[in-house]
Length: 149
Ligand SMILES: O=C(O)CCC(=O)C(=O)O
Image 1 (tube, rainbow, N blue to C red):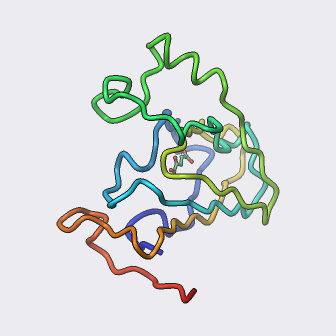
Image 2 (cartoon, rainbow, N blue to C red; image 1 turned 120 degrees about the vertical axis):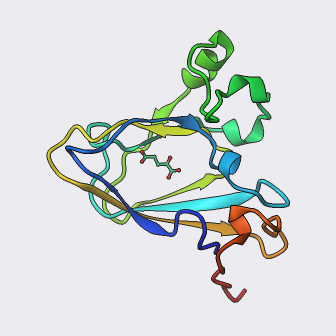
């Protein structure tokens, strides 16, 4: 379990949160293969109103050209071909203790928290033992928690 990515309690405050655009987590990570899985555990109800994740099912199986992302690596909403992909988005509403597993290539986004209560989620990422972080990258900077098989 890499400690460099996720590995935290994510909070989304009612007054200070922001929208997160469409992106794939692997765009910011560097491993031999893009195959990592994130485990998102809800600690409070997650609804559209408080900024639950929205995902595009199956998007991890598609290779999108670099030109379909902006300079900050967000999936561009202005392109008709991207709009057709985004039309398949589904909100992932969770109850406390529910778990969402998603691949590092899954396109996902979230809105800000429009409710009056803070949203908390515990999020961890896992890689296969043979899928090593690339040396010299941020993904290789921190130690990892090795889980016995
Ligand atoms: O909750 C959010 O606003 C986005 C979180 C996210 O995209 C992530 O952790 O990869």
